[in-house]
Amino acid sequence: MERLLLKQKVRELRKKGKTYSEIIKKLNITIPKNTLSYWCRGVILPIWYLKKIKQLNIESLKKARSTALKINTEKRRKYLTLLLKKNSDFVNKINISTQKLLLSILYLGEGAKYISAPCLTLGNSNPLIIKFYLKLLKNCYTIDKSKFRARIQCRFDQDIKILENFWIIATGIEKKQFYPTYVDKRTIGKPTLKKNYNGVCTIHYFDAKIQIELELLAKLIMDKVVPGPIV
Image 1 (cartoon, one colour):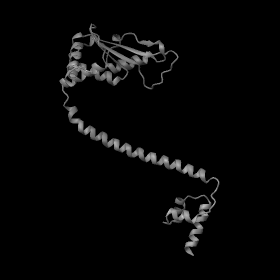
Image 2 (cartoon, rainbow, N blue to C red):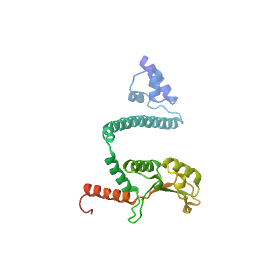
Image 3 (cartoon, one colour):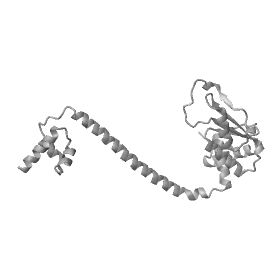
């Protein structure tokens, strides 16, 4: 009788649109869902039941994604911590010679290669790259600050004064050493979509000897790493 009563309660709850998980929780029972499904054969579900199941599936998916995101975030944190620990000693051993190698490769990738121009020229929109370049340059060579010149290139809808102040602070180069800002007229009518875009800052340093040395050093590095003709 007790089992028949339980079966009746299960069917009543099912008729009201309860899921099997909700029924188990409501009646505090441990009966398998396939058994409950057998008990509820022929039960007519409410017309809104499918909509409820769809919503429950959406909520379940959101929860699963949230859980997966937390797990992946923690995995990434542990991985990055391991990488930092693995490479910290290596980075701490970087000396001036190594910095000069870094500078030559940076210039190889980002700098202008003018055979006859008596200056180093490197431009980038990322202030961290510009700061890194200037720091390496000052660490590796005796620098005359008066030999620096800079130019900003920006889009038409950007505020020139704001950009100039930004790059003066970022580079440490005096305002009088900046050439007039170049505004790209091709961007007229085309709003700047990229957030925190401060234009491109190009740094010129008038010392042909440093340019020649860095380009030669980069060539020596490439010849060492990739000897022979490049197919």
